[in-house]
Length: 303
Image (tube, rainbow, N blue to C red; front, side):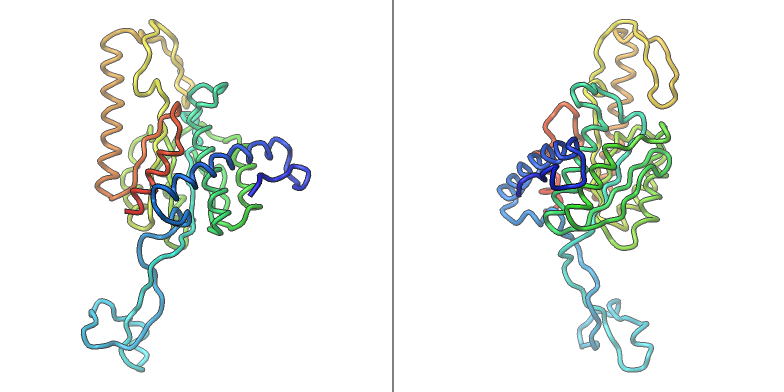
């Protein structure tokens, strides 16, 4: 399906150009999914568990734990719950838009926020074309933007427009608060794609709760210098969230060892947490092509 014609929609030409770029990424993603998964592209948004279907009369051999006691108590017999395979899940993209996400080279479109918005926009277009409901929660240490899950291309275009135009009110990160928001907004089991750099603390309990209640995928965004800080000598470094400026000798062995150690420890802790909670995890560098890596993440989810 061709990208929308700006003259035929109420959206500005800049949005039409953005949608064309995301549409190109979507085509690449769909082709990769269909070739690697040997299946329909709809499998990206298909559930991986069971959902309640109906009740029927108890039969010899049924498990006692399957009995629906609320229905059975009405005195018309003993009934058990039946389930069917989840064929479709609503999707929520939870995107961290705090100031640390704006680290990178804006001119080269390599900021973490740019990549996060591209991933969200790509998933919105893909979900719309597969008739899946997708919503967006953009958060810092507070709710910055919430769009409930909806089906169709028009809601997808509106999501992209509002996300790319968003100017967050707060610079601070609050992963625990963002996850709590997602939990309070979701009324049914959903596929949640949580996108952040995870430079924060004390969010582990909330992430575990989200993983228990929903089908969770974690995407960690990494700027190149966050994995290997360049030796630039003595330079001023400003904290993106607090604004505090300090001079640091980035060539000093002590600084480089400390920085590398903190980065590795944070990375290992997040990977261990995701593995323990059986959560799909992707560490995505902003200087790399994210489409094949995103496909690989969904491939692992399918297995």
